[in-house]
Length: 200
Image (cartoon, rainbow, N blue to C red):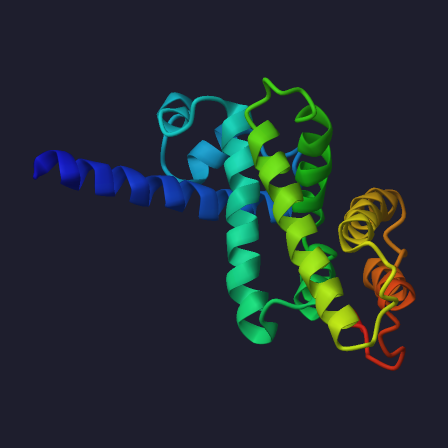
């Protein structure tokens, strides 16, 4: 029983660390969010914080996983599984540049299969492609989308555009990521052009 209680406390502390790290990185940026600062924010030493994670890289990968979990709970609850959920998440990303910086940096580093975030990015990419391919098939079934469009390829194009636009936006914050992605969605699916962007 004591072991079970200790495990539950460990899980709770780990979640507290991740939730706090989300706030700190969103506020201060990825490059200014050191392990020391994150540890101080949750009342731990650096060694104490890393007791809950195998490395700094794993900690940051888990921060991104936590971000996805929070975004899905926040925006998926509003709109369900839809392109609108995706647009709302992208609009929110423009409010948390530190987390976008973290995602862009780790995405590059995680191409190495030995990187702690590699599995996270592979699973995320697979899930994204599957979800958007299903949405495109629904559009095709409803007669609103070119039946010859290959859903998996189209989903990959949307994902590539989203990641590329985030990089462009980090260089030039005036870029309307949501507007660009909505335009691509309309080009691929024939969706109506009069829907208002969540970023406006």
